Image 1 (cartoon, helix red, strand yellow):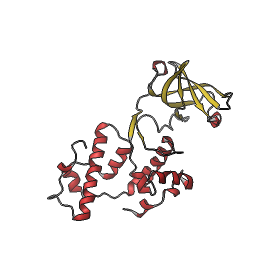
Image 2 (cartoon, helix red, strand yellow):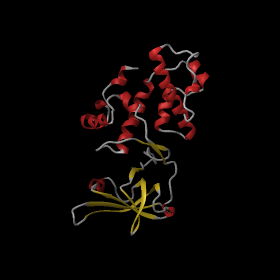
Image 3 (cartoon, helix red, strand yellow):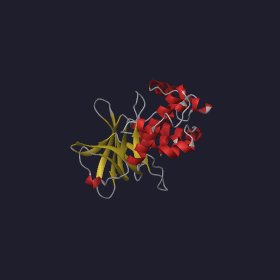
Image 4 (spheres, rainbow, N blue to C red):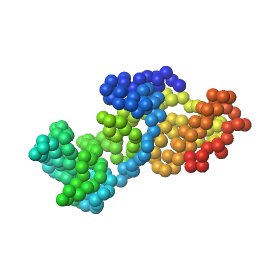
Length: 246
């Protein structure tokens, strides 16, 4: 294992001492820990839903233009920031509580993607949705158009922040992860390379890709255990030992 994978996560971009303590509560101390911190579940965000078709209770991604924005305060002092989003098929309010800084993030005419649950408070709305603003060239979207991981969290750390940290770590450090299996065994057992498996387990391209990643990573567990006791060879390591659900 490359020494760089044992570096403390504190020194990664976007982490620092405060977030490093949060990550430590999740058992994440090193770069390697981050790469092997696998999702607990996934959301399929490959489809953008027209606003005019939304129904209460759905978890959706929408894309539209900001028609209006407002920042108000309740009698109890709670600040409410809201947008009206239009995509041509319909309009829907997006509402955030105690996130007044968003008033400086959005302007009328901005285009953005919003991801969250459709709820009904007099009318349909999305409460505290995740969002990504669309850049002038139409890019800048990382949280839609693909299957998104959902990670176990701790207080002070949300999904979007943790995904961003893990995304950067995958891009920078995945290429230095050493392959544990020789090429002949990869071919014989018909499993994907380790780097591909780690990328796929975080961001699966589909159900087949996810199964392939799980199969490879389960095989690695056996390989590491066997290597501790004796040198791996085909006479005592058999892929049939793997659970049928892999």
